Every structure is written in structure tokens, then in C-alpha cells.
Image (tube, rainbow, N blue to C red):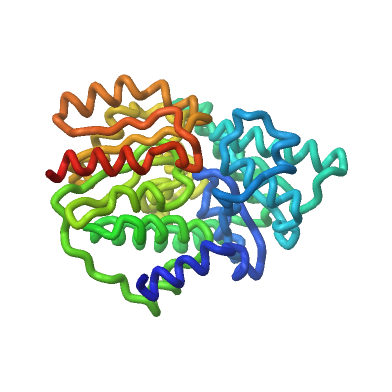
Length: 349
């Protein structure tokens, strides 16, 4: 294990340790620019894949994903009590349902912790939906005490993160598990500070570059299964991947609120996005120069499962080998790793 791996593991073991001025969020399309505009660290609420969730299981139906159960379990245990506010998105069904459960449990006195907020993004590409999202940005800004000048500063800081994640993506050629950790750590910590003291290890280019798409995996275990001397996952396209940040914003835009609303709408990767999922998958494959695609879908992620036939047909027409793992256990303890290993062996005889 490299020293960088060790540092990443330390952050991921307890992502809230270094949070000094607490503000958190849940959901990929929460506007990170607006959160950073507060001048405080903004972290995604962490999840624990292999921990039991007896408290959350009392309240949540089986349709809730494992990460949501883990978040509510930790909330009930008081792990988030030091946080001030948590911003949820309505752009993801599981996230918005979790928000309402937290609100109701707090109302009934069964849950304490931070104040929950909701960001109400609208994805339909029409002016009325855009205005709705702009209004939601203003409401959230008022709750977070952010003005336009602060927003522009937040956009500058968010753009630095976007450029850093783009640079990391461009240099990927192997070391899939390490880069997955880097992407996950970016949800919880300042990557720039970490990489300033820890150089990325070099990796020889692999013969088979793999793209991972579908649901948000719990951690790097799928990447580990795909990693061989000849293959590696060199990119991801799911709701919490680096692509969630979207393109760099014009910090001198005449109306930064409108610019941010447009950017958040176009960057959505979830089931509520109106982008063509098959074409988006093909575009990502081309951009990352992928030789094959792995689509992994957890059983609770029913919204994006409807896109599988179109995605399968598009990849077949493009001549890209693909492995579809549908309706899978979120913790991957159902043989997914073995199936990925077998798929990779077929690519690299």
C-alpha cells in the first residue's frame, strides 16, 4: 500500500474528523458552489457499507438504498450532531425521501442532529423549470446567508475542484482502486491539500480501459475486482462520480444564479435527468477511450434500470463489450466481483 493510499484510507475511515465549521449535503446535484460560498468546508454525509443498521431498519422500507440506511443509522447514533445544517436534494428520489423521514423523525422527537434543508432542482429543459431552480438557489442562499459576491467566490473555489478532478481523470491509466478513493475523498475533504504533500504513484498504461457506469458503488471493491496487470477501471459515470461537478462556470457571468442553475441542470446524472442515458454512456466511453463497459445496478436503483435495454443496444452497435450486472446487492456480496473478474479475463486472454 502506498503512503497516499494510507492517507486516503484515514480520511475515509472517519470523513468528519477534520470538519471544523460544519456544513454537509446529501446528493450529487446540490450546488457545491453555493456551499463553498459560505466559507466553510462542505462535506457529503458519509456512509458505511458493512456496518449494521438496526435503528434505520425500524423506520425505512426495504426500497431504500444501503447508503441511505447507513446515513440514517449514523444520524440516529449522534455521529452528525456536531454538524450545523445538511442540504438534501429533491433531484434524487431516495435522497428526498430520506429528507422527509429525517424531518418527521425530528418532529416526533426520535432524532436530533443538524437542521435539514432541501434544494428543489427542476430538470425539465424549459424556462419555467429554470426559474424554479433559480428561485431554489436564492432560497438556499438565504438560509446559508450567502450573497452574490460570496457566490462568485464559491464558484471560483468550485472551479478549482472541477479543474483538479478533470486533470486527475485525464491522467488515469491504471490504479483503478486508488483513483476511486480519490474521487470518494473529494466528497469529504480538500484533495488539493492532500495531493500537495502526497504525489500520485505512476501507473503503466493498461491494455483494456474499463468504464464503470450505473449505480453508486459502496467503495472501491468493484474497481479492485477489475484491476489486473492488463486492465483497470479508468473512469466512472454515476451520480456521485467526478462528472457530478459539471463544467467550469464563468465566474464573471452577468447573472451567476442563472449560470449556476443551467450548469446544475445539465450536469445531472441521475434518473431524473432528461439526457439520453444511452448516448451519454457512449459519449463517456469515447471521452475516456474505454475498451469495455461495466454497468452495475443495485436492486434499489429502479429508476435507471429502465435504461438498460437502450444502453445495451447502443454499446452493442458501437462494438463495445459490456457486462451488465442488474438488481444487485448494494454491498456487492452476491458474486459481482467474481463476475467482473471473469469478464475481464475474457477481455485479456
